[in-house]
Length: 410
Image (cartoon, rainbow, N blue to C red; front, side, top):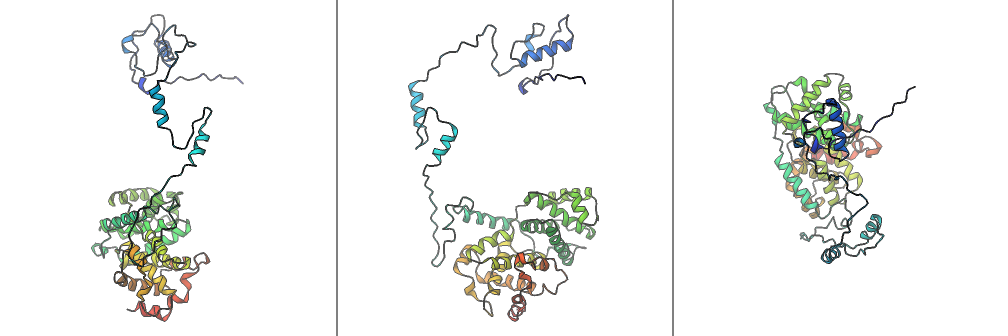
C-alpha cells in the first residue's frame, strides 16, 4: 500500500485574509506557483518573492524578521526602580513573593487570606425569626441577596399576569379541555422523569399563549400542550426529549414539522419571555420560614400540582397560591377544626408578604379542589403522589376528613 506523507498546511491570519490580488506574475512561473510561494513566505514571516507587487502586500501586525537579523543577539532589558516599586505595592496582601513560586503556590497561599464578609443589617419586626442566620457561610444559598431575589420574583409575577377567566374570549377552548391537557402533561412529565419545575413552567407558557391568542383550534390543544413542554424542557432541563419522542408519546397526532412550527409560533406569541416565576420557588422559601417538615412540604407540592389543573386558580399570583398551599398543609397536619390564624406565624407573614385575610379566599378554593381530587376523573396528580417516594400523601385520610369537608364547603 502506498504511504502518503501529509504536508503541513500553512494558514493565513484573519488580518491577511482580505488579499484579492497578487500583482504581476513571474514569466518563468505559473500563477499558482507564485501564489503558493507568496502564501508560504507570509506564513513563514518572510518578505514575499520578488515577483509580487509590493504595493498590495497584506498588512500584518506580526513582527517581521529583517534579513540579517541574528536570533542569538538579544538586548538586555532593565526595569526602572519606579516600576519595581509599583509592582511591590500591587502585591496580594499576605502572599510573600518567591523566586521559584508557581501558580499552585500562589493559589494555596491566597486561600489562607481572611476575607471579612459584612452581612447587611435588616430590621425585622418583633417576633420574626431570622431564617437565614445559619446560611451566611454557604455560598450557594446567597443569604445576603435572598430578600432582593424574592422581591425581584414578586415584580416578575406582577409584570407577567394571567387574566382571570381568559378563556371566555375563546370560542372553542373550554376550561375542561385545558384541565385534560394539563392532566395529560403530568403523565408526560412522569414518563420522561422531568423536573417538577418543568411542569409548572409548561403550564405557565400554556396559559400565557392561550390568553394572547383567542383564535385557537380545539384540535390543536394537544399540540399546544406538548409544544409548551418542549419549550420548558429547553429552558429548565439538562437532557431534552427529542421531537420524535414527543410525537410518539402523542400517538402521532401530528408531525415533527408541526411541533417545530407551533414551538416557534408560541415562543413569538409570548414575546420570547419565559421568566414568569413559578409557585414552587416561593414554596421553598415559605416552607423554610415555617420550619416545615418534609411531609408538610410534600403536601404543599401536591396541592400546587392540583392547583395547576384548576382553572379558577390559574390567574392567582404564584406566591399567593404557594402561601395558601403551605397553610393548608399545616392545617392538615394540625389538630385545628377550623381556620386557625396562629398557624400563620409572624415569621411566615413577614417572609411571605401575605396576611391571613389575603390567603383565606384562595385557601377555600384550594381546599375544595383537594377534597374533590379523589372523585375527579383526572387522576394523574393523585396517582403521582400515591407513591412511597412522596409519602403517599394523596391517599392520607386527613385530606378527606370531616374538617376538610367543612373547610371545602365554605
